[in-house]
Amino acid sequence: MGANNTRLTPRQKMINLMYIVLTAMLALNVSSDVLDGFTQVEDGLSRSNTNVEDRNATILRQLEDFAGKNPEKGRQWADKAAEVRQVTAMLYNKVDSIKHLIVCQADGKDGDPSNIINRDDLEASSVIMLSSGKRQGEQLRLSIDAYREYITSLMSDSGKRNNIKQALSTTPIKRAGIVTPQLWEEAKFESQPVVAAVTLLSKLQNDILYAEGEALSSLLSQVDAGDVRVNTLEAFVIPQSRLVMRGGKYSANIVLAAIDSTARPKIYIGDKPLENSLYELPAGATGSFTYKGYMEVPHGDGSVTRHDFESAYTVIEPMATVSATMMNVLYAGIDNPISISVPGVAMKDISASMTNGTLTRSGDHWVARPAGIGKEAVVNVTATIDGRTSSVAQTSFRVRKLPDPTAYIAYNDGKGNIEHYKGGKPISKALLMAAPGLEAAIDDGLLDTKFRVISFETIAFDSMGNAMPEVSDGANFSQRQKQVFRSLSRGKRFFISRIRAAGPDGTTRDLSPMEVIVN
Image (cartoon, rainbow, N blue to C red; front, side, top):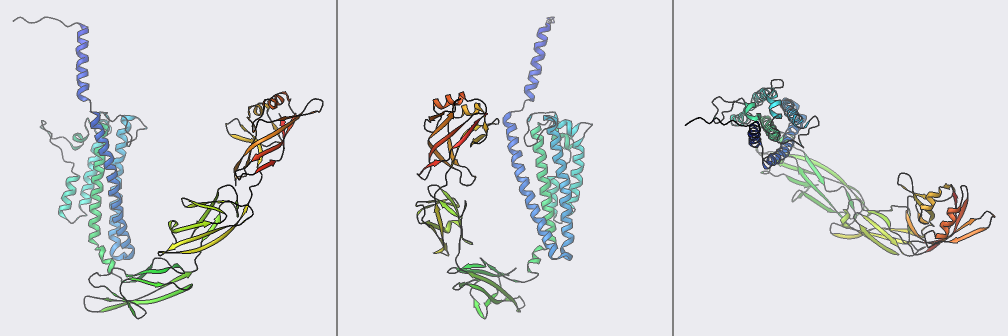
């Protein structure tokens, strides 16, 4: 058969080349589902690392506490534990910095490992970990090797040592189809998506913290920390409260530190034995009281040691704190915030009522709404203590009428803030014409209560000095009033008088007039 001498046109060659490139891109494409899976694993590892770090910190605190109580026996182990934490932190932070370098290589200088944008970038990890200029992978492998040798040297348990060696192994990895084993850093990071590389580094951090925890636990077991709990025997009195209200009950736990459950001590108050460690007595009178006793602790050799204790408590009269949040009076017709508390009693166990009005609870606060002006409002407070409800306070308040409000023209300043013009100074005609009408309120920063304007009258003067009264349209400027404003020149003034406003207490007030100067 003869050879086919058909030649491809340049256009067909270009199409074939594009197909080859597309096929390669499809082969390299990483599924978004796989990337999402790596992200979820990374989040789980981050939470796990936090938990393991907290556990390791707890072990270190135990060693520090023991060293503080028994420096001769515990200081050397606490110092070794602190050194372990320092060496571990250096390697852990090194891994963190590598994460940041990889993400920045993929996302730019502002890259964030916790929020990776180009998760499927296959170049970044290779550049950082394997390129001849950076070789972060080789440096990391050598650091892991040194850390592994250091951490296993502190552990006496061969089983735990082998676990650490396997978890932190950096031996070359044999891949299927490849004759020569790959270096650890090449097998782990060559052509890996960024999110996969970051997840692998988080897993490495988890292994590092695991190794640290095993080393700290080994150090703790070597000092026999349990020994310190029985090194010194001391009696303790733990009252539920040293402050007791009359009618309530005093409760206290009397215990021996590091007690042996197989040989419980005998407890005496005075010379009377106590059936268990809970000591209770009625609080029938006010004042300060003390009591004494001792414990008898049997030992394995048959001997008994005595440990004395003493404690005190105070019984007070029932009391409560009641205060008006705004001032020492209540105002009729509005909600008055009230604070009510009883020392030593939870808020849920406190109840209150009020005469001459209503008192309602709003979360941990109360709202009083008195009715009659001039009559006292009495707040009665009760509290439930040890299952019994008793009155703890009674406080009287004067009920006053709300003060008169101030009339004003509301307008928006250049920044969009609402301002109140109350007269006596110039206001631009543009702002005046844009204002809908007149408002009134008590805006002293304390009461901040709105009133409803019912009606008002404006009085301007013509060129002959004749008064031109005009009546409002309720709370709004009437059209005739607007016409008058429009005709006023700069420096002219008019007066707003006969202002009537209704308050939330149902009363109608005649307010003071105001002078308006047109700018």
